[in-house]
Length: 375
Ligand SMILES: Nc1ncnc2c1ncn2[C@@H]1O[C@H](COP(=O)(O)OP(=O)(O)OP(=O)(O)O)[C@@H](O)[C@H]1O
Ligand code: SF4
Ligand SMILES: [Mg+2]
Image (cartoon, rainbow, N blue to C red; front, side, top):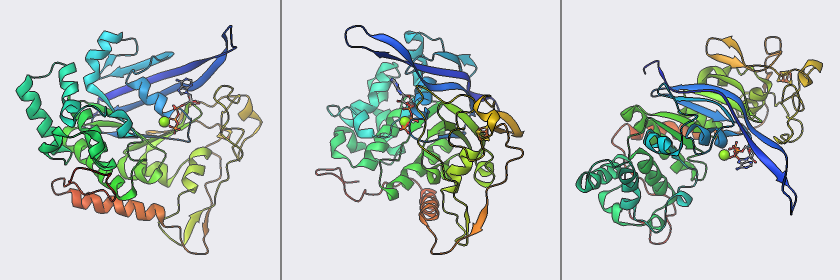
């Protein structure tokens, strides 16, 4: 893994204007979806972006790809500032930055064959001639575990997992450096999730890809990520390598997320930190620390002064005034049977990884739709 970041995001901001009124639309404020977000991703690295629904994960991913314009901030891709790129410049750059969506069916044109879907990026970026594009489509299908004859079929003829493989092949078509994976397995059956996650890891090793992996599922994140960035109401509250953040989360919000995971040791569990109330509205976020309305450790200073991301250790940054003095999460002996889902899912990912050490073999989804392709 080379040290130079593929992506450096600094002070990224996205405000969505909110207008009210029927006849005369009047600007009444902004939704502060992304506020002063900074992170970097190295070549071959996976940074997971986690947090509750509506905290700004997808908006961050779309900003990085310049699918929308940032309000302010810097996005450097392979050393080049792309935040101010116009449409034409971005069209040329886009082959290097791709996205995989949660719902591959919605993102695949139902009227196009798989072959046309996969050759579209090659046509758009004028890569190769007709013969080499056809060869590339066959190659891509093989790389994601599908077969050459699938090129003539339509998206509805495939199962969910197979459609996600098509989405991945399309993202790979123009040889990107960075892929934003926006909840790429949340819509899939658990056993298929493990296959797709391991396919993504396999492709990363093979092609040196960098991933911004957006997810709310901490089992998937624990398996796939190198580092984790935790987002709350548009802001990053903690960034650390995976091992550190799962073993020693320092921000009260990360601690609450982690405490919700059943421990692999059935005799231990972290005392559940109950988050009070709902996530506040990003239209009118709380003053000071945005988490203070739900934080069990909030003090007077928290509602008036916003904490900045500070280094707790090398590569571990936390946005909390008091993280140095907060009590560590309480580990208590548990009674009753363990809730084993998290551990079981991790084991399923590991098992799929062992299988995938051999060449990728496509497994059948449990319930392919009517007329689905035999794989
Ligand atoms: N085009 C838009 N116009 C106005 N507000 C928007 C727009 N897109 C997103 N938002 C708002 O920005 C905030 C962040 O949304 P975003 O989709 O990035 O969240 P998320 O973390 O991806 O959530 P989820 O986990 O549900 O996918 C939300 O409050 C959302 O309502
Ligand atoms: S700054 Fe205060 S409210 Fe925010 S996380 Fe830390 S203790 Fe909680
Ligand atoms: Mg989202």
